[in-house]
Amino acid sequence: MTAPSARAAANPTPNDLESFWMPFTPNRAFKAAPRLIVGAEGLEYVTTDGRRVIDGTSGLWCCNAGHNRAPIVEAIRRQAGELDYAPPFQFGHPKAFEAASRIAALAPGDLDHVFFANSGSEAVDTALKIALAYQNVTGKGGRTRLIGRERGYHGVGFGGISVGGIVGNRKMYGTLLTGVDHLPTIYSREQQAFTKGEPEWGAHLADELERIVGLHDASTIAAVIVEPMAGSTGVLPSPKGYLQKLRAICDRYGILLIFDEVITGFGRLGFAFAAERYGVVPDILTFAKAVNSGTVPMGGAIVRKPVFDAFMQGPEGAIELPHGYTYSGHPLAAAAAVAALDLYRDEGLFERARALEPRWADAVMALKSLPGILDIRTVGLAAGIDLDPRPGAPGRRAYEVMVAAYEAGAMVRVTADTIALSPPLIVDDATIGRLTGILAGAIRKVG
Ligand code: PMP
Image (cartoon, rainbow, N blue to C red; front, side, top):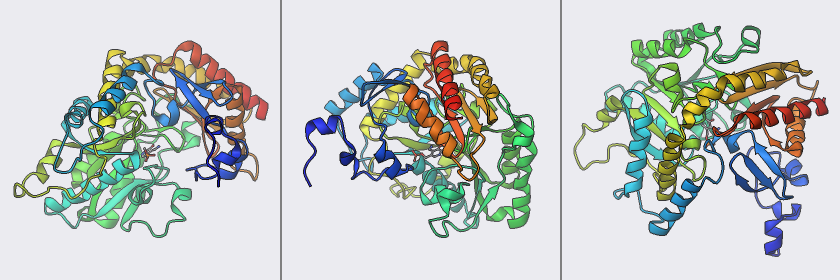
């Protein structure tokens, strides 16, 4: 094996791409026709061949402030020069504490303590472990069951895929966690097609939790985890009243409610957290991605005061929760988070997303007239567009649309036959017009 030359590294050929086993990617197809990004600025990516491509997906739902924003870049640079790393077990550094209090200040109700992880998947496993441990320390160790939802995505840890509801992500990995049950999906095309915002139909689906309680008994159930808006399975907002019902049932039976806000956190739905948009406070809330606008890996779980306090009753000097990561609250990630939260506040980006929502919804919904569109959903600055799949080739049409859009100058995301859009919150009317125009052209071209 020869080391790649500097020139090859800057402008890789397919040979240089061999060693990286790419995640959630058809490796052979990608390496035969790679799409490589070498730069970014604001609302655009720059490709290896020097083209500018509109970022229609905020990277992977994370770069909410847009790309290479000077205050965040500068904060990371400064932090790296001052303190590269400090252990988070038994030691600390100020930026992690600052980031935690800034994040907690944005969370609704008494969600006020932050446990740091490094990704959404770790945030979810942290939340599930805290829920189980909470039941334990409060003398309810029989509550071990976890409830997820069909079409839920909670990352790729064993906890996350166990409560998650995507068969393709589960079926290769054995029996997963035992004692897991699932609520039904909140999506029905028949009842909800072409809805802007929260569908009117579907609140009653939360009553399924009553059925699960009836089946297993509340004394066996620790927690329920849902995304307030399911992002990865096609942008599925909660129906009106659904989360309130879930909250009421959880309260009735002493079950903890976890919102997975890895996608919805930090402005995607026009609020710091979707919990605020829906007026429902969960017991634990997970975040990641946009906490520092996607710049340095970071995630975490925010817990309500009574949950935290329950752990603080044991002997002083004892570790209250045997859990944590080498990089929990990493200095670079924490510095980037403080800078990103400053930027969100100073530029009013959450409010901007809220103000743009009607125009965004109109622009995306206008694609309805294109051939072969089965449904379009919009909420906040996100949208899911379901394409009619080619017979016998699920996902193929959407994949081709994604490739055509990229070639024409826009990055969109594809899962199965759904195109997802989620531009940075700094997006403007003109860019929304260009993005939806390029996507329309790609859908027409692919046919
Ligand atoms: N939860 C949700 C709701 C997500 O959308 C994602 C990622 N899209 C995750 C968890 C996992 O995050 P990560 O990929 O950072 O592990």
